[in-house]
Image (cartoon, rainbow, N blue to C red):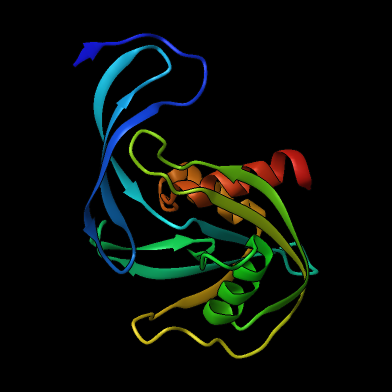
Length: 183
């Protein structure tokens, strides 16, 4: 890595090459001059973005899902989540994912967090939405999804986080934000 002239805006991209393009994500290699003036090669995972839904039932329980996550080699309890289609708004993506994974429909969706989960190498932008005014229905999971759906009291979720039983970072962040700022 060599140093080049410092700038104030985003990195200057000298060269960009798509190394891999899969169904879910891609890998791009960029030769850049960063705002600090550092000249570097950065490998970036490309991703269209995602939505995370925090569905709250009228009695205050939060609907969670449990599914197998191959990358972790285990089943995880999580908030409803999925990849946002490029043409979708976060609310449209959240409504689609909520229906697919749980069968619930919501009268109201509100984005309460807009975060970059792993900004060191992943360009994914993650929108967390509160879903209220829920009505139950039949889930419509994708062919490869085997999902368990269950509502939890906040007290239970806090204990699951404390004990390490709930380990999904986006869910922990969403629940803590909800408890701290929205409830």
